[in-house]
Length: 240
Image (cartoon, rainbow, N blue to C red):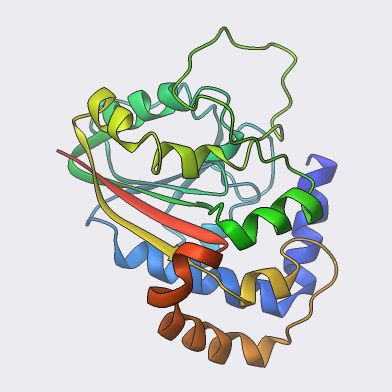
């Protein structure tokens, strides 16, 4: 296993607050999925299998719990074979997002769904991600740009701004490029619990028993504060 994945797995095993937080994320994701087989792309050490053992899990890097190694931009599956594709913190690592969406549209059956959980770059979260997170946030890029693949690119290279750009300022361009992929929901999540959890870092400022109450409190505030300070976004698309 890649040492970075091993470090993430150690944090997952050690932090009950992290597992509780992601259990909530996967609960929300599963609520929006269509009936039928689900593919998790960029699954790491197979997180979603903890909550749905039937999921097919793939990643570019080898790890226990995966069903196969594969690139999100070249999915090794037949057309129309999945009802859902799930990506959790993966899209902002994909070198050519448009190639992924073309592949996703190909392997999804009509009515199938793509669920994307990603960083949300808001006025408050930007400072957190920019100064306290190791991955860059570059809002000046064109998320629809195409370029030749970089053979030296690392699987963990990223730009956390890409999902916010694709489904925010560049949403009309995305719809024009992929008319068969309709956005059916775009929710902002995570006001307090996610940053307090420390993510996959070793520290946490929220104990496991408080995660549920804090998430419930967040849900009440998200309609008011989500645009200004949400740390996460859940986008669901449907194959028309």
